[in-house]
Image (cartoon, rainbow, N blue to C red; front, side, top):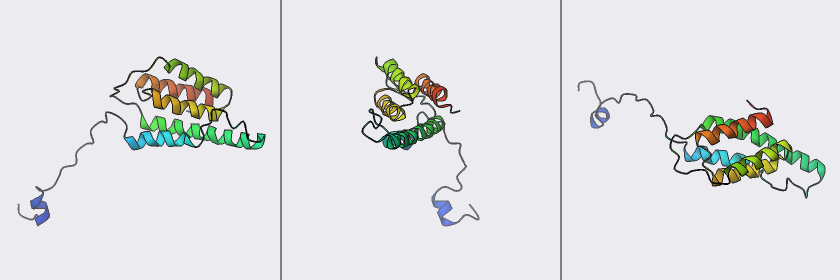
Length: 142
């Protein structure tokens, strides 16, 4: 081990760079970011107590949050390991999201997304792709 300093000798020489193993599922921080993108914009009533200009402003902010959510959802990707099955309410949740988006009630849509993220395995490949296509259809994101 000629030419190696003491630290290299203690720790077994030079380490070879290894490829990072393929992930089984997104990290907790990535999932936390998905949730926090929407948290300040979720309101089932869609700010009905606010004056119309304030309501429009908040609704547009929620729409921007949904665009950010879409980008983060694409970045995070799907999970290869899902322990949980979709519940009976999954289709109803998806329909509620679609109705909110079509009615341009973006704060309600944020609320419904958070609801779905809590109760359903939204990182499962089929649900993940359905969420993406729902946002693409209704928000025009790609």
